[in-house]
Image (cartoon, rainbow, N blue to C red; front, side, top):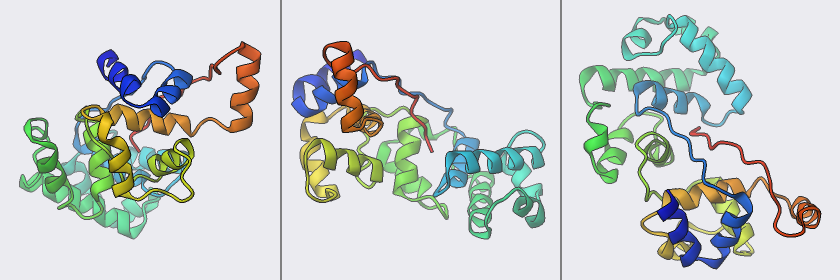
Length: 222
């Protein structure tokens, strides 16, 4: 991880300033499992609090652990009572079918290339490129994933690189040329940079006599 941070610091002066403010990289990971992907589907377009509650109810209905077999044994009514929308209910059932049929073998994913993982996961209903990117970063621990479609990354780049509009994926790819082969770590720092406001940063800088020293929250996969 130190090698990645050193590379990013040397390759991009703007990113270097973000790294200095955020501090050590505390990228956290989850196992590359069925549960991880099901969790990502539940968390789509929901607040962390609401999604955590729904996922907890779903796990409870499944007997304490969400597995493909447990999902298959749950009724539509049980999944709906957990708080799932009909759309997400269908997505999780499709995920279970892919796992049970062997179309997606979670044991094999670590040996596959990034492109192969994306192709396999996006064949599942409700799993798009963004979710596949998050799985690559936070579960498979791939170091060079650039989630150009992530709103947080786009907002952070707009702010840090003083863009008038949200940058397009192509614009982010252009900016990120020097980040390779550690784009995943760059994305993490960009997400953390959104925790700062101009006023807060200025106040902390004065208090500490230099760069602000914020508290850093662990990155989330969802």
